[in-house]
Amino acid sequence: MTTSSQWFERAQKVTPGGVNSPVRAFGAVGGTPPFMASASGPYLTDTEGKEYVDLICSWGPMILGHRHPAVLEAVQAALQRGTSFGAPSGGEVELAEEIVARVDPVEQVRLVNSGTEATMSAIRLARGFTGRNKILKFAGCYHGHVDALLASAGSGLATFALPDTPGVTGAQAGDTIVVPYNDLPAVEKVFAEIGDEIACVITEAAPGNMGAVPPLPGFNAGLKEITARHGALFISDEVMTGFRASRSGWYGRDQVAPDLVTYGKVMGGGFPAAAFGGRADIMQHLAPSGPVYQAGTLSGNPLATAAGLATLRHCTPEVYARLEEVSSTLGREVSAALSGVGVAHRVQYSGTMFSVFFTENAVVDFDDVQATESYRYTAFFHEMLRQGVYLPPSPFEAWFVSASHDDTAVNRVIDALPAAAAGAAAATAG
Ligand SMILES: *Cc1c(COP(=O)(O)O)cnc(C)c1O
Image 1 (cartoon, helix red, strand yellow):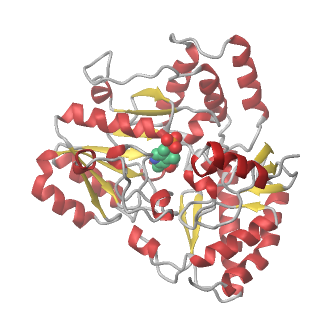
Image 2: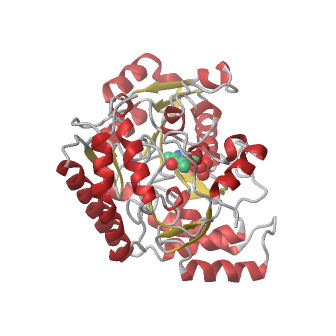
Image 3: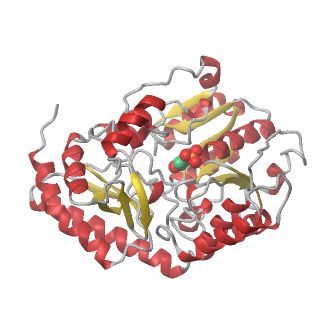
């Protein structure tokens, strides 16, 4: 048997930091990340045979739990038919139809391979459609590692305390304006000055990438109104909330119709599939219908579309009800355990994603996030991990549940909370 420590040592020789996505390295909480060997329902099993209740769910995709029978069956059937055609296939149409049927403002979609590609392509399209260069984003919102969007990009960068990233040029970031989240007057001010130069505003529909910091009432509607008034597009990034916050994503909750929307995570069912879509008159500007170029060798891959379609089709009302139930139960129990040991905290929800902030105050923007006593999370996290609960390895990420989290799994989490809360209470800064 190769232990996680041995894998991690080997990994660090051949891969920067030993991981293929930074947060997995446990940089924010310290220690050796368990290397996973298998997964089933709400559980992950590491290479040493230790089982964990999974509260990351692959950062969202595993909404039905790991190895859901219907998803496995769909993928196995697709596998028998071929793994990539490089030509159009029916599965792509069915997945696009499923998305379009769920979200009224999304009249057409283009399938891509990752959320990063979706947001990158959406802002290119917004610029091509409007003939304007500047884009506006919010501090703490993450939209993938798109050059132009890696300005104050939330969890990953905050976690690793990089104010900006080398490799992105001034020209690439220079057309990006960053304002505080939930601050409509700041948006108004920018538009009052240079509104006719702004191609789009992009926002997480309900942020999860600085922890769960939901939009204040009227915030998304305000963005829509301001952008419409100035001829700019409103892009809602639903890569995390899409088909998780409701069957039509965050849109199903606030009914604010964006011009363009980005999806990923859930819609790929654990495979690399993502999408951007929206108003048909805008989408028609994409090649080959229009002049804005965008393409992908593996876009609409038959295995990915089969997994995504099977996942979405099994996201029934019962699934969403269970996500609500599990997330509200866990949020309540975490809160009770922390209150029991006198630790100031807030549990906040962005739909059915939630996170725990160590503060007494409401957290409405990224400055608030950074002002929390996040050092308490390290102790909390490691005690949960020791007891077999796999939480996000960063205080600035959301927790994800699945419909497969049954009462047994939920109770395992609840049983682990008192010791973790005691750890949080005993933690000291620095
Ligand atoms: C995960 C995420 C992305 C990037 O998706 P990848 O598939 O990791 O490239 C973009 N936007 C949001 C809101 C996300 O949560």
